[in-house]
Length: 207
Image (cartoon, rainbow, N blue to C red; front, side, top):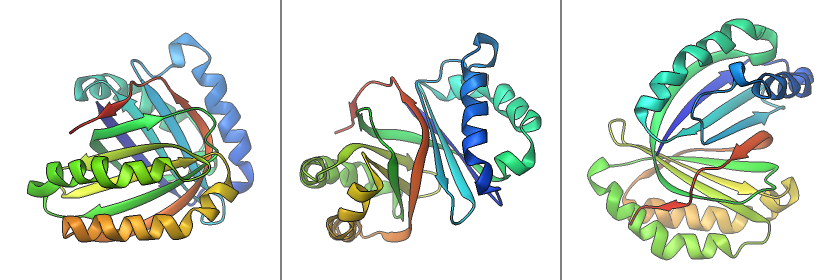
């Protein structure tokens, strides 16, 4: 599976709910649905005025087919609602294990040697994932890899902001261990509200 991530800034956060309703209304009509999307997440940081859209597809070809509609949506949704798009990137989905009910997300970005990514992912599956699953309020995880850029993103999903906040200490420890094991660097850690989510992608754990 592949993921498309679009990042936005300078959004009028007082109108986030209006944007979410607009996207929901568009997705409810067949001609406006993103073709072949297996999952979509709209992550919003109201305080920072930033947002991230994560869309999951079966293949890069499916993303290519959806790009014209993404571009049309960008043209038709007012800039004060959607914000300014600052990047669009594609990632390989290495781990996908989610359940319903997420309202908060933590996105950790790592940089490292792409040659070690497969080993790093095996370590995450064997050593880190069992501990993450045991944290109260956890509802899922996505591990996304850009081998060309040497970048990994780990998205953990939580049933509430309280659950995300309570998990911070354990998350810090697990993140530091993962970076040390991979001889990588923690680039950023961001926290978001899950404003919109649907996910029918199958569970995937690359070993």
